[in-house]
Length: 121
Length: 161
Image (cartoon, rainbow over all chains, first blue to last red; front, side, top):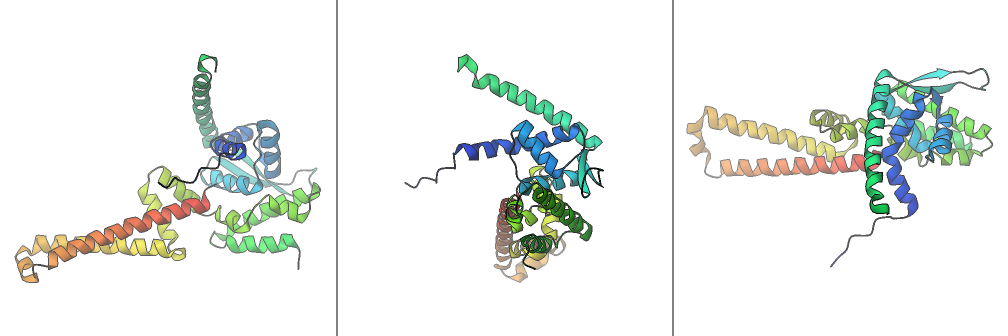
C-alpha cells in the first residue's frame, strides 16, 4: 500500500503555518497604533509579536490589504529620514475589520487554550 | 551595470509588467526604498535582496490573483470568472477551459432551441444526432470544469502568500 509523503513537521514549518492566520491580524493591530513604513513594520512585528517575516511576505500582503480598502498608504519624507518612505495606516474599514478579527481571535484562542490545558495537561 | 540591485529591479519590473503602470511604479519605488533602508543598516546588496526571495515569485504575489483567491474563498464565482478571463492571455489551461465552457453553453442553447422550436425536425436529424450532441455537451462540461479546477490550483499555488 502506498502511503502519502509525510508533511513537513519541523517546528519552523509548524510556526510558519500558524503564523499565516495571525499575520494579517498582527499587522492591522500594529497599524492601529499609528502609520508605519515597511521596514519599521517588519522590525516591530519581529520584536513585539515574534513574527519573523520577510520583505517577500510583507509587501504583497500590504498591497493586498490596500487594495481591499483596509489600509491606506502615502509617501512621506520625515525630517530625520534620508529619503521618502511609504507609510501605511488603517482606514475606517480597517479599524472595523481589526475589531472583528481581534474579537474572533481572542474568542477562538481563549477556547482553544482552555481546551488544550483541560485537566491540567 | 553589474549592480545586483539594478539587475534585480529590472527583473522585478519585468515581472510586474501586467499591473497598471501606476501600481508598477509605486511597487518599484517602495521596494527600492526598502532595499536602500537595508543597505543603510549595513547589509550588503545581496543580503538586502535575500529578504525578498525569488524575484519571479515576489512579482507574481502582487498579481491580481490575490483578488482571485479572495473571490474563490468567498465563493463569488462571477468575480472569480472575471479574474480567470483577465488571466486568459497568460494561461493555455484557462483559455481551453473558457473555450470549452463557451462551447458548452452554445451547444446546450442550440439543443434546447431545436427541441423547443422545431420538435418535429428532431427525428429527421438522425437517431444519433441528439445523443451525440448530449455526449459532446458532457465532454465539454467536464473539460471546462477540469481546466477551471487546474487553473485555480495553479494560481493559488503560485500566488498564495
